Amino acid sequence: SMCGPHNGVATCPDNLLYKLVCPLWKINPYGASIAFSDYWKDPTDQDKYLKKNRWLADINNERETKNSTYKAHMASLDKYILVEALQDIMVVPHASESHGFYSWGQEKNITALRDTEAYKGDWLGLQTLDKAGKLATYTYEGDHLRWSAEFYAQKILPELGPAGAVLV
Image (cartoon, rainbow, N blue to C red; front, side, top):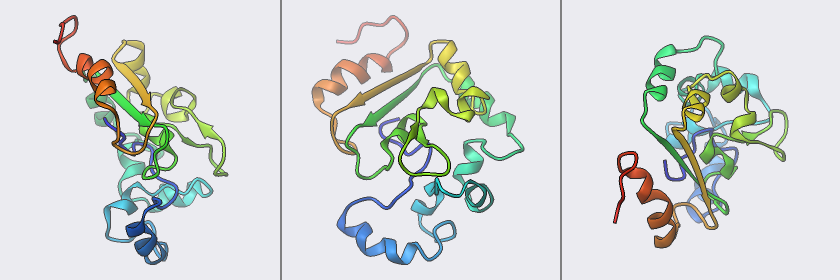
């Protein structure tokens, strides 16, 4: 996954379009009929997020009742590759791209993937993938989806072939 907001977004992206849309969207952030609402995760109100989020809380198995099919499907992957842009202004916090996020109750400290309750409880099978050597995480210096050709060639392309294959 290249810069996907896997663990949600906590603020509007810093660009002109969102500066126009966000004031209207904030009236009903979990209920607005735009895709951004499905990724909204207010780190200061976990209860409201779990009750009102239409999609992310479910697909990340964050609700009390877990969906074993989600975990089984993730755990069945041959490889799960996460790429995080360290200066991302679209996905905030950028740690979401690697299943990290702000610690609940504030918007400053980040909880990294392996320290999240979801990882520790293996809600999605991420710990299973990791222990089996099937989880790869990469970062690059840059903004959303702005990786270099060198980064892609050296880090991502080798991950796309079968195990042990030499890609030229």
